[in-house]
Image 1 (tube, rainbow, N blue to C red):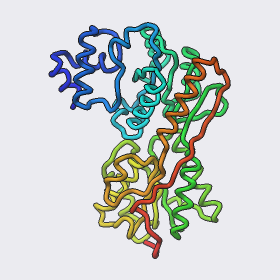
Image 2: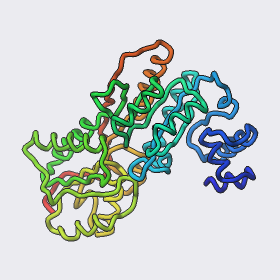
Image 3: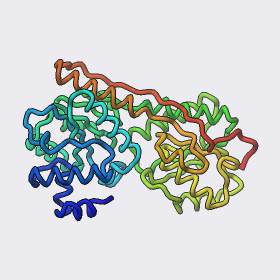
Image 4: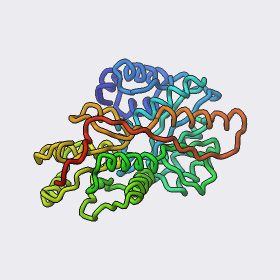
Length: 347
C-alpha cells in the first residue's frame, strides 16, 4: 500500500496523509485518526503508531525518533530499508513496554537545526533517539543543544559528550574475516559502499585487522564499490568482474547485506556460482538474507539489544536525571548459511 492508496481510502489529499503519518500539525484530529487507522489496518507502517489523541496531549510521555534524510544512506524512503525498519520496530516495542509513546520524525539534513527546533516547539518530547548514521559530530551537537535528553544510534564519536549505542562494527567484520580464513581463503576481495560513513569505515578496519593478523592483505584489484541501498545486479561491478575472469578472489566480504545480495545476483548473471566459485559474506542479517539463493552467510546485528539499551538509558536520563554519558558497543554474531564454502582452489 502507498500513500496514494491511503489518501483515496480516507478521501483526503496525499499531503494530509503525510502530515498525519508523521505526526505533524496541519490536519484535524478526526482526519489524523482516520488516516492512522487505515494505515494500520492495511499494514502500511510496520510498527504501532502514536495515536492522534496522544499527539495532542501536551504532557504525554513522548519519545521522538529522528532520522535526517539525504541522498546517501538515509534517503527519504529509509523506513522501507530492512535494517531501519527492524530497528524502529524494536524501539517502538521497548518504548511501549516502558509506558512511553514513540513519534517518528523525518527531517532534511540540510535544515537540521531549524527542523528539530520546529518539531520540539510543536510537540515537546521527553527525549530524542537520534539516528546518527549519516551525521557529523557538529550536527549531533546541534540536536543535543535543543534537547539534552538524547541517545544517538548507529554511529559513535568518542569525543562527544553525548550518549551513543551502536553495533560493534569492528568486531563484526573481524568475525567475517576470521571465518573466511578458517575456510582457507587467501585471495579475498572487499566490496565497499560508494557512500562512506562511520559504520562502513569501522567494518573495513575490523576486516583488514583480521587479515593482517594472519599475514594477508587485499590486493588493490580486489576492491570493489557498490551502492549500499539497492538490491540488483550492478553493471560497473559486473564489468570489473568480467575483466578479471581467471584472476578473481575466492571470497568476497561485503560491507552490508544489500551489497552482498547485489553481488550474488551479479555473479549469477555472469555464470559464476556462489559459493562453488566465490564465497560471499554480508553484514546486518536483514530478512532478505534468508530468501536469496543461496541463503546469505552474514553478521547478525542485535537490533533488539540496541533498542533495549538505548531506550533504557534515555528513560534513566529523563526520570532519574542521569547525566553520566555512555558509549555502548553491542557485539555481533556470525550467522552461517549457504553462501560460503571451503576454498578448493583459485579462480
